[in-house]
Length: 94
Image 1 (cartoon, helix red, strand yellow):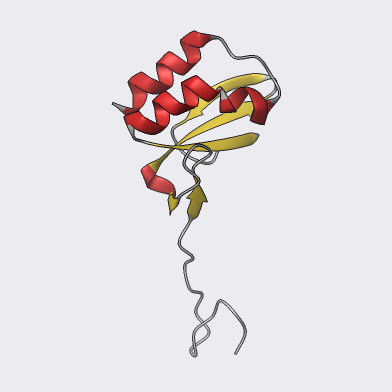
Image 2 (cartoon, one colour; image 1 turned 60 degrees about the vertical axis):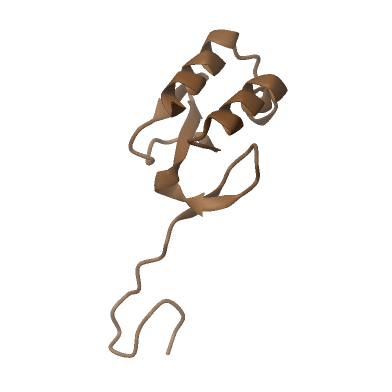
């Protein structure tokens, strides 16, 4: 029996787990907010399927405040983001 299949040969759906860039906890993809860099633009990814480099943040005010303080996304995307973008993240998680 190959990995990822049942005895009948049907595929097993994998649980999509991702890690928060702030607290480093592994959570289900639906519990996290995805920020994506595509073609030099940074935006929120509502669908979770947008192309580009993505980073995940917990939907908690603690992680959002820490993200703003540490400016983790600047380091991940190698670009200087304005404070207004971090404010949008804080507003989106509340």
